[in-house]
Amino acid sequence: MKQTLLALAIAGLAVTAHADVTVKLGAAGPLTGPLSHIGKDGENGIRLAIEDANARGIVIGGQKVKFELDSEDDQADPRIATTVAQRLVDAGVKGVIGHVTSGASIPASRIYEQAGIPVITPSSTSPALTHQGFKVTFRVIANDLQQGAAMAKYATQKFKVKRVAVIDDRTAYGQGLADALADAMRKDGAQIVGREFTNDKATDFTAILTKLKAQNPDAIFYGGMDAQGSPMLKQIRQLGMKSLFLSGDGLCTAEMLKLSAKELDDRVYCTQAGIPMTKMPGGAKFNQRFVERYKGEVQLYAPYNYDATMVLIEAMQKANSVEPAKYLPALKALNTKGVTGNIAFDAYGDIREGGVSFYGYKDGKWVPTE
Figure 1 (tube, one colour):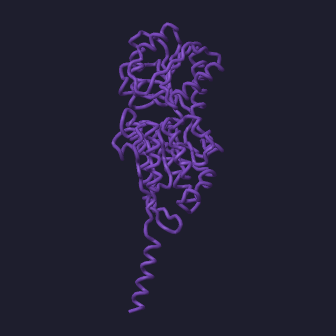
Figure 2: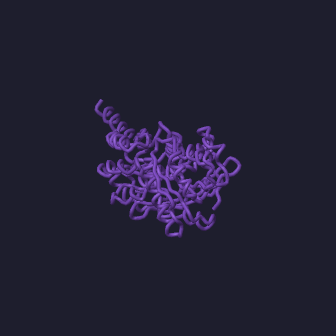
Figure 3: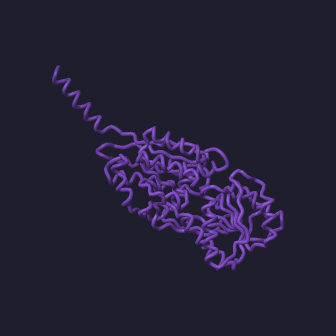
């Protein structure tokens, strides 16, 4: 009888040693509200990565690991973002992919720093995020300084823009991008003829635009998202303004194409952190799989969410541990190839090779120009 019990105990230990270990990964972004299409797009990219990782049967620390997603809705609201971050920490997540906006990422990053949990943003581009001196914050996409400098050079050299009006939505993302653009424009010899701001809930920009119209700008740059960019563009055209309409990746979305189908023309251009999906090393295959899996097109950041997820998992594999303190050094030293390109981080946690692309509107689509 004793021998039987001993054999059962040993067998039980053997089963336990090889049983799946569930590892929670956190995600945070706007799943409701005007930016929900971007938040859901990113969440789908994360889910696809987790499905791929689980299909590989990854073993870490001698045990097969099953990754599970804990996704939270921060509504792109800085206050809600901190609550969401604390909720993810309390849930025991081993890493976080998020947040989508800089305004949410910056306050939330303090929570993750205090808990020692690595967080990789796929889309927050404010330089302030990674320049806080935090050890656990990373970014897999180019920042606002890179986007602003690129757009300024593009506008002044290609379109000979001399007079620029700049508007932002007062979010960390919008204001940061607009400030970077304005500074770069001045350095490239252009004059800022108007500097205005609104908010990320506004829909009526007539007063601002009427004021700017009197300045006769060659171009209007908007730092913000498509929910405001679309009515702004419509009102620019209603006022009879012939200015170029320039923006960053917040307007380079499939949703902008739907919202502004009547107003978009060859005077509208945007930058996007990163390179076109058609030029990403794994872009074509990712796009095909994404469309088949979710029955809809990629909005914007899904490939970067996918890579951010895979980067966390790869660091765990290299460290042979899912514990943040143990895999963090491997994450900092990582140099790997993802869907979007080569991924390696500098001392701040920024991606070393973050590209910037330009898009113009043509035949109902955003078309890469350079």
